Structure formats: C-alpha cells, structure tokens
Length: 284
Image 1 (spheres, rainbow, N blue to C red):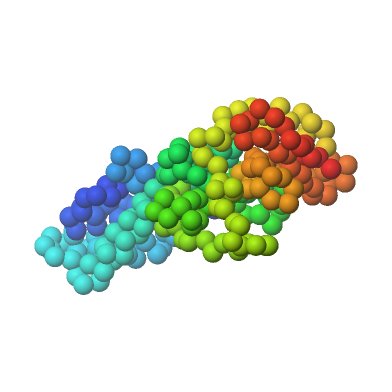
Image 2: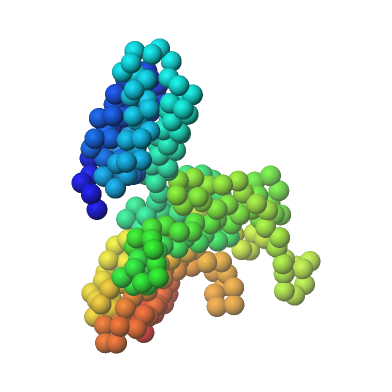
C-alpha cells in the first residue's frame, strides 16, 4: 500500500476553479482520494493513497491547466470533474456523519433500550425490545463487522393513537436513528376474543437496565475460564410466553471454547427491575 496523506476540504463552501485546480495538482503529486477520515465542525478530512495517483492526476491536470492559464471558466470536462469531486466529498461527509453515530456495545449493553426511551418516552408501553451485536471475526471468522457493532435494534410498542394495536420500529444501525414504525399484525393461539394486549406490555420506566453492564462484567472471569474469546451478542426484553409469564431481560453470549476451539453460546435472564438473576446458562 502506498504512502498516505491527509487533506481537509471545507465541505460547505465552493472553491473557485483556479484555487481548486491548483489544490488538486498539489494533491495529485502526493496521492489520490481513497476514503474519508473525520468530519468535524464542517470539515471533511480525506485519506489519500498513491495507488490512485494517476487517476486523480488526470482529473486535476485538466482543471489545473484551465486555472493556471488564467481562464475565467473551466472547460466542460473540468466542470464535470468538479461536480464529480464535489459529489464525492458530499457523499463522504454524509457517510462519515452516519458512521460516527452508529451505536456499539461500548455505548452500553442497553443502548437500544435507551434509544427507545428517548424516542418514545418513559411512559410508553412496550411488548419487546431486541438488540443484537456483531460477534466479530475472532468469534466467527465469517463476520465482517467489528466486535460489538450494533446490527439490529427493534422495538414493539403500543400504538399511542389506538391502544388495541401494536407498532414496530427498527433502527438504522448505521446512523442510530429509528425508521418509520410499521403496524404489527397480532395473531393469537386460542380464543382471540379473550386476548388483551395490555397483558403483554410493560412501561419503559419499569425496565431498569442501569446495573446491567456491571452484572455482565461480573461474569467475565467465569466466561474466561471456558472461552478463549467471547462477545456479547444480544440484549433483549422478552415478552411473556411459554417459558415465562412475565417480561425478562435476556443477554446472549458467543465465544470460542478454549478446550477445542468450537464456537459455543449461552444466555442469562434477569428480572426487569434488575434485582434478580432468573437463569444463568452463559457457558456450556
């Protein structure tokens, strides 16, 4: 891989053709555009790689010649090149702004729960919250996302405009923003006339995840005895069902078993007030 260089481009201000042409000529002598690095206070920092030198040099040369000759207007080709570069910078800024907001397990195991409370309010009634995180390539070699990256965050909650109905919203994990909610079609086993949605709902304010991170940290020594490496893969609020008549907080783990390097997994369940461990099956 060639040498890498950085340059900052003001994304919200158009540069004159002459100035931009000269800047690109300078860039071309060092390397070519590869990927954005940061977006801070309206500035987009770009990374350059000499593998792309010839491509950018050709683009910047046409702009630079027009600028250096004193021409007031760039040629059509130079104008098109400017449009392309502007689009690349704008796209890089949008992508980087989103990735900077992408939630991870490091934000807290209850990052999805907090986002739901912020979006819906503490008095909202929910049936289920499901968040899943990447295991990372050390646990699953086929995984291409880093360990702890939030992959899924969904919330099923009571429709505030029609309490008989259930809505579901999904987070865009690249930005941390929830998409528009969709109505859930409820199916019932048994006598549908006896179904009461309230029996399957709990207020977000009654779900206490403040001590969850500490509880998981307490399990580290036990997990390290069995797994050579492990990752927390899921944190959920599970609704009442066949195995429990109350809501529970469930956490999932996956890891490589030290003794044979086979992938294993497990889970633990806690009361929603955070005071009781209902079950601990984190290790095989």
